[in-house]
Structure formats: structure tokens, C-alpha cells
Length: 127
Image 1 (cartoon, one colour):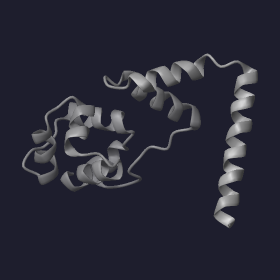
Image 2 (cartoon, one colour):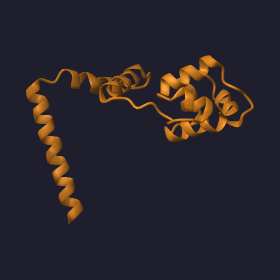
Image 3 (cartoon, one colour):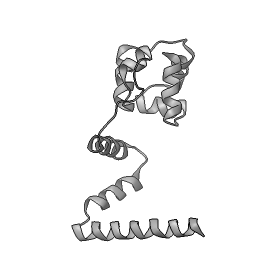
Image 4 (cartoon, one colour):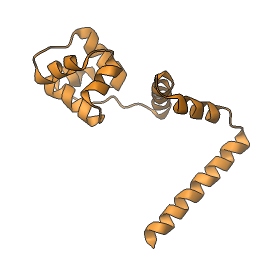
């Protein structure tokens, strides 16, 4: 299991400290799990699966896919929970709050401008 825990962390591009912070534990615990010197409790395994959307069967046995496939709505819910629960994310919270207050016309304008940006980038790549 130790190699699979490390694989999850690397796949998510997190340091041991960042991974530990998300789980509410110490970095040395993560290092211990990854080296096999410590075994995570069932509660830690459950939390790891919930926090990172990991397939528990894969984590315990190596069978199946690493991550559980989420539909777009679940992905959005997970993302917004992460953004809004962060301690040092004042800008992120303000930005999400601004998005929540957009009218339908403002969303249409935003979509139009995003499409223009993509077209401009496509043109620049062709030059």
C-alpha cells in the first residue's frame, strides 16, 4: 500500500506536507506510510479515499482504477468545497463569490470573451 499512497500523492502533484495538510495529519506520518514504516489506520484510509476521490479497493489491493470517476456536477461540488474551505484563499473565495453573482447576460458576455480569447490564441499558434 505504501507505493500506492506515494503514487496518489505524486499523481495529485502534492508535497508530503500538502498531502498531510489535506488529511489533517503530520508530514512524518505520510513519510512513514510511503516508506512502509507505518500503516495507515482504517480511518486514515477512508479519509484519504474521500479527500482525494481514491478507489479504496485499489488503495488496499492495487486492483481496479486509482480514482473514482466523478460526473461533472460532483467534480464541481468537490472543487468548490476545496476552494471555499481553504484558509489562505481570500482571492479564490472572492472570485467564486463574484461568479455566483453573475446575471445570465454577464455569463453570456463571459462566454463570448472566453471564446474570443481561445480564437486569438489559436491564431497566434498558427502564426
